[in-house]
Length: 298
Image: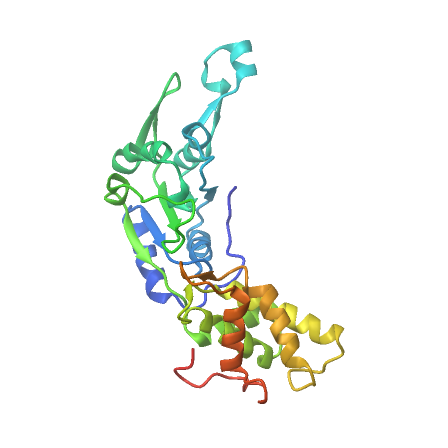
């Protein structure tokens, strides 16, 4: 799959954008490291759109074999014509190498080691030798950009030093509260009161003592959309309406409970943690929180 433009503008990430831009300009391969929802793919799409480069996207998982990454011969074509170049179907790696493009590997630490080893010569020499097909050299402009979430330990493996030593590393963190409100507002167009509440709740999930990994800004977007819809369905005119706090809790359960990861050994549910956070942000007997967060608030 290729992309020419970013689906949403990049908010924040100025330093990371500059580093990635220069890394690509100086022919470096890069791994973008950070939790979900920090804008890794959006940042890359934006830079690629500016430079006019295609991006070949690959989802990294245990099913990504060397053949699926490189390409393979079509059995029917081989029977008809033999092992000729026309019988070979390029995989995403060769597509990017031949097409001056960027190969974007998502979830780098979920890809089997056997498949990653295919990339070592590509990263070092810019070329690969494919059995029966022969030698393929990358065109000018080819770069490998990988992304990984270091906080997710399920189904992942440590990326070997042979790969890590051949790539620059750019670490992305969550944007500040103002940037996250801007992102959610751009996606949802919702009232500031809903956006402010959702962003405060989501940011608090990242600081809670019982949470190993909190929600991304995508959780805030879903929370805003669910909360706005539920308020409408229940005939509640905004957060000041009677019963709106319970509606916010229902929306938060749906939007956030599947996104947060509880610390190993802590016998609590995600819903119980959300209750804690909601009590802090919006006390049971208090008014809804203000539209804007004071400086320094989570």
